[in-house]
Length: 387
Image 1: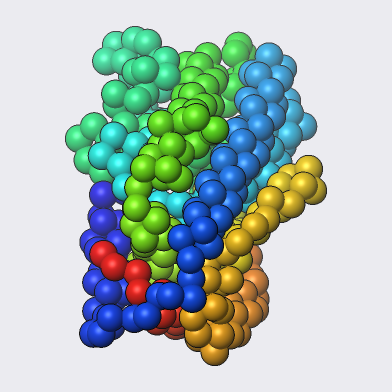
Image 2: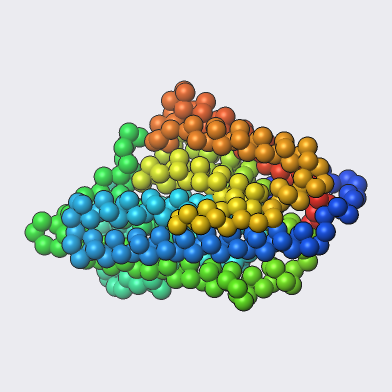
């Protein structure tokens, strides 16, 4: 979302504000930096490939459900959607650095845009005819191209595509802080047993949305694969210190500006489930936990693939250890603290932000993530990374 730029800039400002004197960088060689940069590119590619495969599985489940709309097949779609989020949330650690995911024409807004006004897509309580689905005269065709053109049309919350559009189509509105959305499978049943009109268009929408998501992953994989345009730029053409700066900026901005502030603090302050990242499915606790895992992956230079394969190599942690082992140890200790506090958050998140004990847990996680971002910035300063 566009508003995240503010937090990204803030995190960058915080990161570079501490620089006062030139730092001796003689212990860290160009070869060391190159190894970190190439390993990072390998991790990015592997996690996008895993995300792509999980969304292919989601597409298979959706096609099965559309062909045979039953409660069991709807549950299969939901399970596949949740599985895909575990990996995709880790990839948020590659944002905020003008890379392929969120440069000026990047697909991030098409993939993970939120918060969303659900009535832009389909019926809501009190309005049975709202949304693209229920207006065939205005929107006669529902295709990936049409949805892409409609995304954010008329406002940032007019989200028409991506994970959260699919989430809403599977779960429906979340009308209770005690449960996730309760959309009936009969919303997709054509005929006398169907509920809520335009069931065929709802199915077309679901199919188009997952198809567009797959296309966006194909674009990202092509950018980061061996010989890909951005991978070549990142690993071979960009100055090493610039590439390292982009890596640090990504995780710093995600840790504080996006994860701590936008995804947790806003919801905690407003006490409004509409500010949840995945409000329809009550999957927000998983979102924030695996955003953290993505940050940790980048700093440690290690990613465990869905098939168990480990992609690992020289890391930021290794470089910082060469310059100032104590600062690296402080970062590692803060990673442990933040992980414990984030994984202590309970589901559903919309209850956590209301009840006293839950609010304390979320607040503790927010503060720990903010501290982590500051410690990463301080440790990176030891490398003499320049803007």
